[in-house]
Image (cartoon, rainbow, N blue to C red; front, side, top):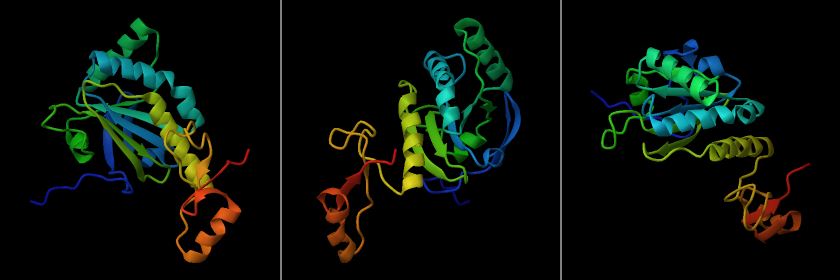
Length: 215
């Protein structure tokens, strides 16, 4: 039997139907028109995962401003998910407003969230999916390291700016050491355009030109 290939950046997000703490979802169809952060965690009632759920929820206002939905997942029963999010609300005073998928392993395998040499549970995977259902970024963290939520928010902001203005982002954008919050012009693909670039933009060379975003 041919092994199913794992989803890659630029692929359409694999479809599935799943039971969640908010009822059944059809993914990614139910989120068409929105950005989605689909993320897996190793297990309910574990310390690092608990801090992550608190942090994801804490960032919900920023995700909402970016038209972005959060969807969590682990290989735990739905009853465990329900009790865990209740525990977080009761003990940490933070109500978890996003759905959490109860996976039996099929979704985790389909998305490459299970890395057998590291754990039998899902690792800390992050899939950023655009409003058309295309996977735009994939980030993996091991069980012992919690995610940086600011980086996930930054990545979505960068995608939205890149899509709107046809630009690229420098390292650490919008706080790049060289360019600050300026953005990079895609490199010229022909000689004539390359000659014009330094006259049209600020450039270190024709292949590294940058500009300010419109206010």
